[in-house]
Length: 269
Ligand SMILES: [Zn+2]
Image (cartoon, rainbow, N blue to C red; front, side, top):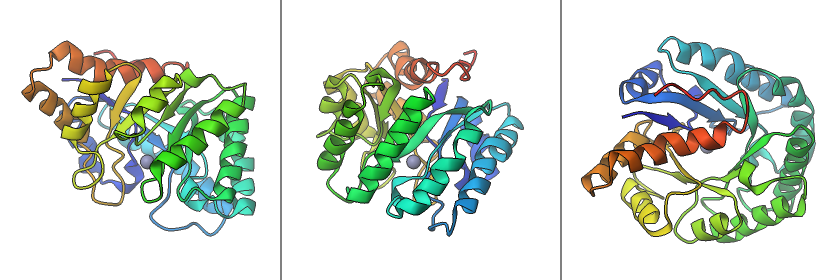
């Protein structure tokens, strides 16, 4: 089995997790910028984080032959402070040309607040001006449906953004169809105890198809599983999905989306 892990917060994981992922068939890992498990006190904290994402993690992954890519932004959890967000947005462009940066993400909404929407609009503008792919986080605790609608409005309102270059992550049964109908990509995030389980994800694929969909583990500081994608592949195999169908969902689909950024090299399978 081969797969791409398109969303994992490896800064929060131990090196053994890289070993386990490669052993399970991981051919590339992508790391969106996100919360650090605590609120950072200044833009300088983000500067160091972006260096960690673009310099340190690629080296740590390379020890096991695993290509590591990342996405940059100030995440929605820390976007309530618009002044801090402005300071972070100002330092992102100097990192965008680095060889493993794929785009702007994971941006989006956390509590669906006015300030979060303002910062989201600024990120979408930054992505448009620099011709970047976009990876979007949708809220878990607040109303996901409302948050997804608000995010889709912001994206639609910017005519420079092509929907096929945007992925809306953490979709669930009540949001996946509207995301796909809008021409956007949808990410299913697999969690071991809450939210979308492997069985629920496979149910959704069986119902909504496998076009413009990827699976990811989004492993971070919380209870999460860096092997959630290959475990979901096992669930598919158990239900009788073919090896080709599994490969499409966990390798070819993410490769197709990510390769829209020329820096992403499709791993040899
Ligand atoms: Zn994430």
